[in-house]
Structure formats: C-alpha cells, structure tokens
Amino acid sequence: MPKSAASAAADSRLPPGQTLVTNFPVLSYGPTPRFDPATWNLRVSGLVERPLVFTWNQFRELPRTTQLADFHCVTSWSRFDNRWEGVKTRLVAELAGVKADARHVFVRCDGGYTTNLPLAEFLAEDALLAYRHDGRELEPDHGWPLRLVVPKLYAWKSAKWVRAIEFTARDRRGFWEVRGYHNHGDPWKEERYSFQEDDE
View 1: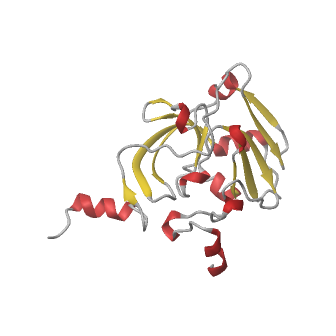
View 2: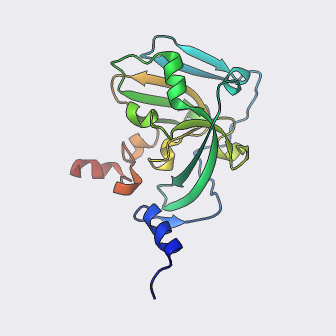
View 3: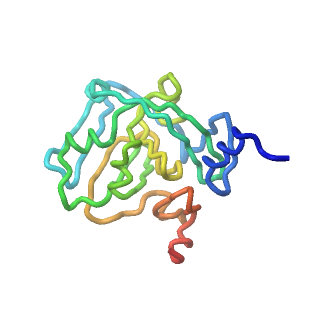
C-alpha cells in the first residue's frame, strides 16, 4: 500500500536508524542540578576579545528568538517540531568578540557534564541557548535554566544546564566523546560512536 504524502514527508525528516516519538524522553548523566537565580551565571571565555559573565537577569534581557527544529537522540528516537526560545549562539559570540583563530567550542555544565563541537556548528543559524520549550519554561530535567540546542547534531551535543562556553583553537573531547561517542555526531551520517571516525 503506498505511503501517504504526510508519511513520506515524515520519513524524509527522520534520520536513518531513528524512530519518531511524540513524548519527550529524559536522558541525563547524574541528578538534575538545583537552580538558584541569585547565584547562577553564564561565563564566556577563551579566544574572545571580551570575556563575559551574565547573571540570570542579564541573560534573560538579551534579545530572544524562537526556533522550530527537530531533535534527534543518539539512542534512536527523534521528536519533530520542537519550539525552542532563547538567545542565538551567534549573538553571544558577537558580544564576546570571538577571535579569528577560534575553531572549536567547549561547553561546561552543572553536574560536571561537558561537550565539544566545531565553531561552525555552534554558530549555525538554528543554534541557540534555550530557556523555553513548546511555549513553557524548560523543565528542570530538560535543562532548566539553560540548554544549548544544536538541531543538526545528535542531542547529546545539545547540552543541558549550561554554565560556561569556551572558544578554543584546538578541539577537546567532552564527557561522552571520551567515553566512546563520536566526536562530531551528525545524525544523517549516523555518527554515533568513536570507532566510526576511523572510517571517515
């Protein structure tokens, strides 16, 4: 029986090896951190002209954007049409004045989690630092108060509970990347595990 147009369109948005879900599963390393708006800050450092430290109120005063994007987890589920609200990563980079020799970004989070990605992926048009999801404040288990969202990569790169962003010249692998996950994580290429890097 031929597929409907809607089914065919959905298939074209689903990377290989993924299953579409309508709920939003929670996958985290470690417990959900507590958030105190009086002490929380976001640090931007490394190869920048102007190192920055935002308080929670200062960050929320930055221009807000809305981004509709699909979300692909390396554990093989995908969720379509997530409506994220937050601050474009490009704006944060512009405010800090990223230097010409920066090539990579290293992200640190509450709870000890880290991840890494190329500067070009961090500055993608659809990448943002989100604090709202589907019309509501992010739930704590999904990264409240601040989550990096990089839709073109597997979701472990969309780090939860972000606290620091460092711009670097050299790549440095993050938490899952040193534990066998792929250093890049493109879902359309099924870049799931580090052993696949030898074939690229």
